[in-house]
Length: 464
Image (tube, rainbow, N blue to C red; front, side):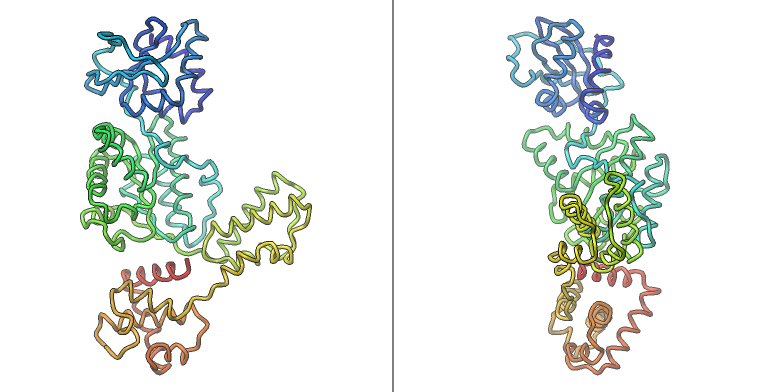
């Protein structure tokens, strides 16, 4: 049986692709062929069901091409202890006759480990690799840490925690890690998914009484990658399972990579023990992009498109214009460039500055949205849990005065208002008071890492 299945697997891997083959078909073992039925052992019910729905026809056809005359498949779930838990036919197959049992070995083969399934979450995007990730000062530490994790082996920090605003490259780096790691170690198991998908699978396992399958699936990987972990904040049962999964993998020396929109300590509703675990690794902030980094991204994307369409013409100053005007979100920046490419390709026109302004008018208007002092005051008051009235009132207590100074600093940085104008919006304060507050925050931010992180996060939230 093993030789026959080995021959079938050679062509199946070619037909379904290495990723699908390794995740779904490789864990199976062909046990017997009987009366037109191919009996398989599977490590979990989930794998059995998935193969039945998506690959049964391909497996049947491949076995028939080898002269087996197979009409349908049937699966027996054989966990690591070798006990047959259930027999399930493939989709459309007839139920097994009473008393009939598929043959099973005493133990599952060593290669039939519980395979992680990237299909549980978002599949890896082939575009998101290290080769097309543009590195600049705002993301150089995150890029270096991601490269180190992708190399495999002991890295000295676990987990790697990436955080930052929307469109700064967190997801790109996570996909790049997974691609590079699997290239270096093709037999390793990498599971990438969002925190929302983790929660969904956990709830599904509880509902279907397959929690042990769930635990086995998530705790038998070489690398677990969870995107947008802030989603599980406030969800007690999911946090409990995430905590135990996290501990089990760390205890086995398995690598974990996490992303979020803010640092662990800033995620409200996340249990303190999880915040503590996440903070034990390397926490890296992806800062807002600089003009130079945005221009580098645009140039790289343009070069890639020109390889596909050599006759593409872009006028002088267009990329510089986009890098200057679209400053908050790399996804929006790339989307704007893609729209220009489509415009030029379909209409056979050169992309001039005038064409860019006309074609991207809606995006440019959105990115011209001005941040107001009111926006800043509300966001800072909400972050520090103080009343908005105290922000402009006379109170001088430290828990009010410091947030007020931060709001003054951000008002100076993010708006074009003069110091006297800012002073009037802060309860009629003198411009020298505003100047003192701005300087105070600048001085404190050089030594107080926590305050600097607060200011950077507030700035990201306001610019998003």
